[in-house]
Picture 1: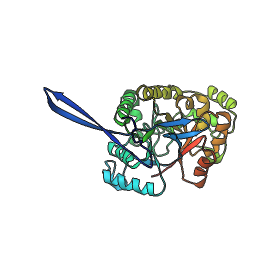
Picture 2: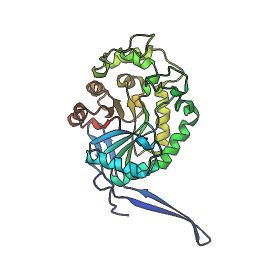
Picture 3: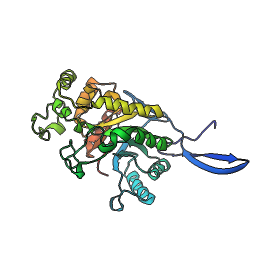
Picture 4: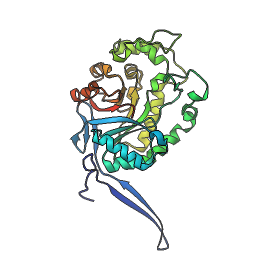
Length: 325
């Protein structure tokens, strides 16, 4: 193929590879693999380029269920939802916070929708799903993937990638969502949490305030903070290594809820791109002290300020994902 038609969001051209098993001149099995041909580049201080063209991603964080139809979503339901989102101007989806079905990615290929494929919502430690912080209870409502992570994470991540990596729509792999909540010392490093007896008690200005400290002060606070059995940066490097062993064509990312700490702890350095979760106020700080680290707004409430960050800083903020869809 000397002059293939490229896949992009305007013209999602697809091809099909046909693999045959022939025994004694008889075809005993045929397998068809759809694929697309395109180039992607994430360049610090320049932005995201699809087939060499600068492209901004206007996305939503889409959860894996289909509302009333539950988690086993018929393809027709996905298509209707994606058509509605495209009509509203959406060109990207973040799979919050677990891998989706094969049918979903097939539709994104066919319809020309960019995808950030997210693996995990928990790593070493559990979240309390009622408060979305750290593990505070031991009943079944608080039990999630953390129960399987140490034994099955590598296998689950690899099988997800081997299934999904031929999809041209997928342009990023996300190793995790708001994982810092479960490493409790991270929140105290920020200075917005100060009560050692109540890790849910936070200064109300946290969500709209810039970081309290310089990176040097933050790093010192992090180094002096008590750690648990697992170090988030080390776990993230391990996951990033698993991804890179199977695919070096797409960047890795993670959704950071406490990015000022993740920037100095090594967590942000473990992935190629960093996503901020409801932390637009950290963008100027992050770009001042870490100008070569590209940022996406991986989760936000969908305000004008969210998209304005992309329009005002296209060289460092290429995408925005509205939460709750």
